[in-house]
Image (cartoon, rainbow over all chains, first blue to last red; front, side, top):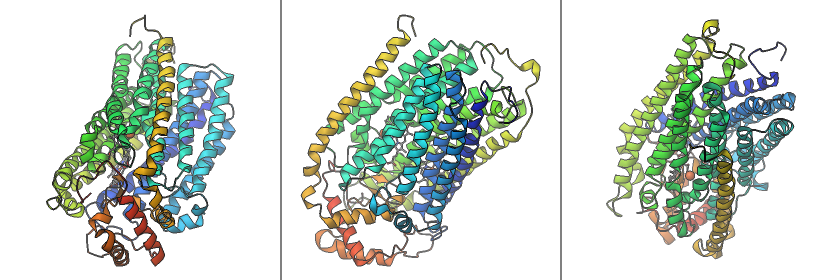
Length: 475
Length: 146
Ligand code: HEM
Ligand code: HEM
Ligand SMILES: [Fe+2]
């Protein structure tokens, strides 16, 4: 970058900025398609056949995953140099990979929207190595290859930075999480002809991501931000980090079994999946204790109150979404009735938002003022708007979750519990749930307003008055 | 956390626990692999079933439907549609008629696209869904509505 930014410890950290900005742009796209689907849930033929539901859903979920990946990469480019105490190995490579990934992402989304899916499969030679058409892994095989190439370049870049510099627990855990993310993604290329086997390894990507290696990434981002904003001793913070991720792996790996109940896998998973996944809320609960403890023991009053709110908020919301809503349906006798119902969607939303969307926004909230050379924190007005965005989005997402939960309970009641003959068909059940889906749509509009608030907060420029600026001892 | 419980101890639990449980997971995966052949009637997994799976994937059916409870929640479960819609005699003709009839065009109703599948593709899809319906799923779903 041409002008020296006094608020960055290392100038190369500035490559994080385009990653964060693009992540938020994709987030906006994700929500637009969420609203389209929300409307299709009640007005079934809305935008049909222009954008059928399955297309909107692919766009919604793939944008989610890709913007989170951009967020994680941006976080790593910001955090790793600072932890390693040296400049990034190659800022140029980071920028090249940014454009490669952005172009591949945009082209894939355009492909979904402009070409019928079967046509996209034919165009991209899916028959040579069929990987498409599985939930969340809908990308053409060539896009998947592109993701792997970008991931390798990215891991090389931050890996070299770390190897040549200081190795802290935080950077080691982040690195392990990111390597794990790349390694488990490789299972997306394995698509056995046997459906049961296909589903079994599909979860190695999906579950071992969100309830495995992504928790390492989340934990390290949280630990980094907490050190910065509380000034608590690194030893203490890193000990907590290890305890949290130890719990995550000990419960979460065998916990994968909660997806093996009804897909053709053997009965031992009914027990193992239930028992281990029932313990999966523990690491999320520990994160709540961690964040609140550290903030209470803070050694300084950091001027970026919004970042502190995000850091505490993400732990609480992740605990609710993943821990509480996950536990709700994770025991096999319960899951027998709730599997693949609106309850699943309720949990998926609060968990993804609370854990991963919010941890990325925590990092953005902390780092963006520095990346934009505004100082340690944006001015008070900008923070107030950001805090509005936080509450509007978070409360709306809680409401979405509650409405979908109500829909799910009624669905189970009408469609799943009664015997053959007495049970209502799927389509007739959906008719009964319309009121909940309307309410979910209104809450979705609330979420979109919150997102707009959040984005507007970035347009507020200005500095913190010098008097408020805390001593630079810890920063 | 107390001073006697050090960062090094926490790190060892993380490494040891992570590695140990991943190895257990691999062992359980091995066990699972030994059961698939019988539980999924692999002997009856014909070429048509395999082709049908590809038709299923390349038209993104999972974007609206669930299959064995996984996928999207917008349209009915299809893991057991074979049993719900006629079984051995009637399912295949049903599927042909159904795919031809889309979209139904009822105003306001959730709509399924016209995929323009060939006769052969629909036959394959029927084979895939018939085979899927016979996987041993530990008795899921609870009833035929899925
Ligand atoms: C941040 C962490 C988590 C995220 C992002 C997450 C996300 C999701 C998503 C998106 C699904 C739906 C997958 C599909 O489309 O088939 C799902 C399913 C499920 N999750 Fe989680 N989850 C998390 C943590 C947990 C935890 C901690 C538990 C248990 C305590 C749990 C229990 C379950 C269960 C049982 C299902 C299967 C639901 C069904 O049978 O339909 N999840 N999760
Ligand atoms: C305006 C707000 C939103 C609306 C109206 C909305 C709506 C929807 C709808 C209708 C589906 C498809 C459900 C189905 O398959 O039948 C869906 C899926 C999904 N959405 Fe959203 N969404 C919104 C925001 C979000 C946010 C903020 C996140 C995460 C940060 C998210 C994550 C997901 C995930 C993970 C799935 C797949 C769930 C599963 O497979 O269980 N959505 N969304
Ligand atoms: Fe899971």
